[in-house]
Image 1 (cartoon, rainbow, N blue to C red):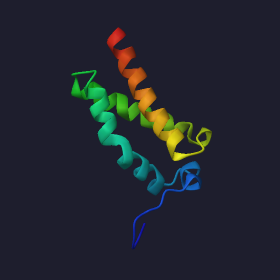
Image 2: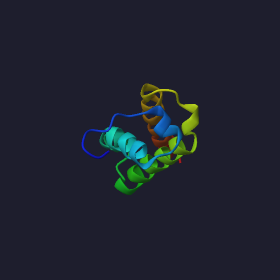
Image 3: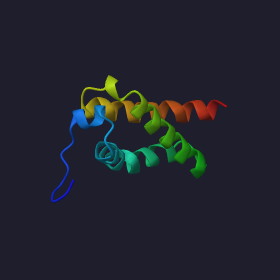
Length: 88
């Protein structure tokens, strides 16, 4: 990432490089936190849900073949986890 802007590579993501992980987190974390906070008022729970979803994404990273698939997963999973939390 030295010298210029990082251009995301699915290979970097598959290889679990720090630069790819940070890129994905930075791309979506703000919107995911807002999405979760519109459903759940507990800030700690919001943060935990988003963190858990990212951990699941990275655990199954080789199942994703594009940035759009990653984004779709993140938003869908945060929404599902928020709904599951509310049912508890």
